[in-house]
Image (cartoon, rainbow, N blue to C red; front, side, top):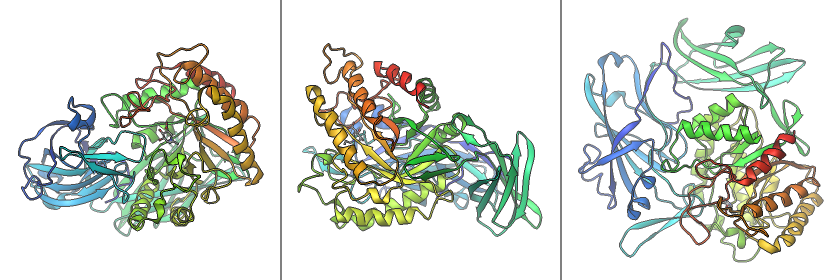
Length: 598
Ligand SMILES: CCCN1C[C@@H](O)[C@H](O)[C@@H](C(=O)O)C1
């Protein structure tokens, strides 16, 4: 069911997008399966794919709809495709899906931010119209990621209660492809690079659905530079490699041919960037040179689109990040659509790729409890074994999908869980041990520590190759005139970390202040542009004193939608850019700083 290879077209492989208008119907009483909705929706409406119903409706109960809902689309399959294996590949379906072809169940998937594909060949009527139906569910629990719960309102409606600070958008929010693939096919390939003596050794490991030989060819600007024919794994070596880096995102082309009895039966080509990432003492090295990460925590989020993929938004975000002088972002708090990583490879951005392990606590204000006995002991609950299984499945799918991107430099296995209890350490010790077996390039593994999980109480930093801090001194604590105290709080904490002599890099993966682009205040006040500037200047002045700080990823790239609440004005307003991607004053401050920072 996993589908790590992005669809391409060549003489062996064909695909077509199934995006556009699908039929849609909510199923609040979960009667659809009994009433045959997998064959025919009784009273559907049009729904765009990719898209999310929550951003399109004018009715509150539809916006917050929680439970089962159905998508359906008819499609024609000509008989000349009979020789191929047919699949439907979903870039994602949020949060879980059951797929039917002409009424027959063909597969299901848990997890709303990673691709999967279902084989449909055995259920297709050739030279006829066929029907795909998807049963989707968007409920939150402590047995899946992202975590949350739900309540039943007085009118009987379910309401998702996220343990996280972004709107629980759901549906088919990424591209959908019809794939026609060869019977014998390449299903994934993994690459690792060693650099020495001005040579690069590229070790490959090819996964396929049949035993075969493989011919692997590397091209530099169309010129063949290396070639090998082998079973699934071997290596290629090239002299004077042109390495990939943010300032020079150079790519080679790799072509893999699958051979049966000497005849090519499948071919997959991709762009690859030769580079290495490692941690040495308290520095992050890219191609053996220390790097400083400048950029953002982001969200996939935009007006009307919700989290639906849209290449215009992707392009605009990268243009803004190039303009401001950023070189990095974290895919907070879930793996983004594949197109984000393709652009990062092309434009030379670095990505900390994050699995949707957010809300592994019992409140998004968990940080208020983390240092006292009010802790929720989240990892002591009986649902943890089920949660761990899903967490591991999604780590594997994320790494299988993204391990070849040169832009991906690290894996974030958690965002702000409960992290000061022995049971949290026991849980994540297993999670890290599981994950460390999966990446052929052995990139660094980390996770972000919630406010309060500091040097005296945090249990998870020993598992991390570099330590990521989400800190809000000057906002959630010691805000406004008390910002004078916030400075000392931040310094005291960093002194505490320094005294542990961890000899590890630290990255600030979140720090920020809600700011209304309409607000100017003299003297500055919280929510004003002037305060956002003062807040960041305080952090930057302090960062200078701690050489182990190797990155500043501000929160957030842009304003984004959350659930409603007394601390949210139409959503989270900590953006450097507004939700429609226009700069706040702080963007010009960061541009000046980041273009000078090497
Ligand atoms: C400590 C608060 C949690 N942190 C996580 C992120 O998802 C939130 O959007 C951000 C905020 O509250 O702005 C802070």
